[in-house]
Length: 437
Image (cartoon, rainbow, N blue to C red; front, side, top):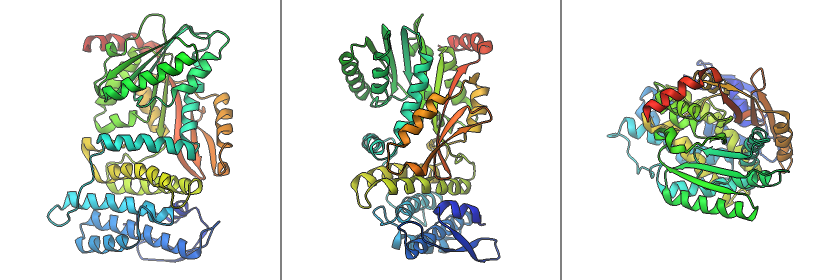
């Protein structure tokens, strides 16, 4: 089985290639030519690493233990999280994921020390630090936060009492800029409330105190309501939606975590709760990926393309041996590990394309309300704030431009979209939710 076509290999490397020869399986070898500051040797080494990774994945798929050992040994010789090229570093995280996969399938043959669980509080803290560093180095977080906030501000026009429900608030990094925008309105709102959902009571308390201090400095009337629970256990009564409030729901990188329930019940229940809150707008941001495949080999192939682009973007923004880059890449490495090595409910990094999300959202009773030109213009301004902005681009998704996608070269990375409840179904869904309380 050959996991990649010629076009897909070209996309992985972002370099000019030409066919050198082809084997009986239809897989092609390429004579790599250099681009930018990459040397011919670096390109050839990168090609070899990707070849070893795909061959190792094929060996795991076929159960060829001898070949697994061989390719793992070859990868161990070159792949490193501190390697000189993004391909060397990316290969290290995929090698770890493949090792975990092999060890879980044949524990008597392959063994290794398992990393900490992905829900470990230490790793969650590391992820928060990495996100701040990512915000400094790339336009990714700013594009997502500012696009969501700009669309939310348009929904709040003329509204005096606003209520934001953040389905995973963590440190609340998205909201200071929105507070500034609300405070600068000709007639600022008389009531601003954020309901923040999270698993840590202490973290939510700290976030609430931090946001309250920022709101006070802007003379913005503010209340913070914490919901300490798992996302799938949230119910309407927990959100404290009050009469006369203009409600906005914010879901940045959260809905894909409900897809562990392959029957669709977890997502359906959550969308029912959100629908029952009757938000004026429901904002969604997700990785533009297709790695929620039943066959792990497909997940491997899709993820290798996606994270090759991510690591390439980081390499263009950060010093080769910088600790900041390593912290960010380690966070993405944990995602890779979960996508490749985990199964069932333990696999929660389940990313889908905008088209698939659109079908799921519409099935859940929502209609798309779109991203406007204001958000596009703002996004382009954000991209130009970074030295490598020419490699980033924005693209409308869907025939009606319902989503806005951030791309690195030709690879789609993240899509933001805006939704509202279908009014025809609202009464029935609110009644069903009230019966579950």
